[in-house]
Length: 335
Image 1 (cartoon, rainbow, N blue to C red):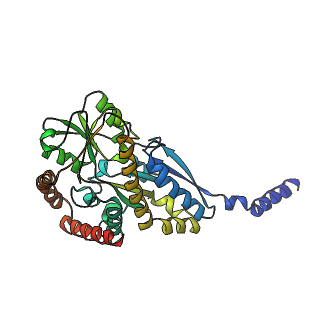
Image 2 (image 1 turned 90 degrees about the horizontal axis):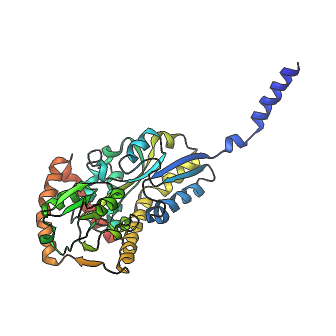
């Protein structure tokens, strides 16, 4: 009798306890960028806080920064496997998996980050590149401003690249490096400092947003800028993680994600680009060069075969590029 009453009381207590039902869902966010990176401080971090607030307390986000749950080469697989629920990463290591989205990396096509970010998201929204992302809940797609070249040897134009070894993380940039007569060495951004310090490379191709966080100002002194091609990026979510969310949490992700997040991140990377360059400009011993008009025209001419190869190698390549250029021009006019 006593045992029966005790079981009944326990059952009643469980039914009457609302805390279990109200417990927020914990989501793991993984980023290979270091905690001090502005991609976290200005970009994804504040956005995730806004989503948590908009979810009315139904979710809680735990952040694992600096490749704790996966480096740049692992972030996609870790998200697919559910090791992380939400991840930020760059497309460079996954060009073969997301060939159509790599249109945003093409040189001399869409140099302004916010407009190119809006453009690439709209391609996804319209279904033009949806086959790339069918395994994920895509929260946002965006682009970094064009990469700059940074070297420990003077580089002012095409002629100065001959014989150099340049560390790259994006395939299209690697092709551009070879067109210039240099050798490309593929590596993660986080490996570039050590490669420069040890003399494995003479320089690196990377945008200003990532330059300072990875301390590349310590191993390079000469910097040349041009519309050399962007670094497409993504914020993705495991589909199962999204499916188990309460309705309020789903609404928060859907209402604050998509074009809103993509535009926010593009604007953030433009701001990061300016801030990153400014920091280095204030340091002694650094030299900056911008492509002269004739140099830029020659680079663009040499880069055209890269674009043509991309079109041939990519499913519906011509249509994807045309749609991307059109959306980019539209986004520029809307600003």
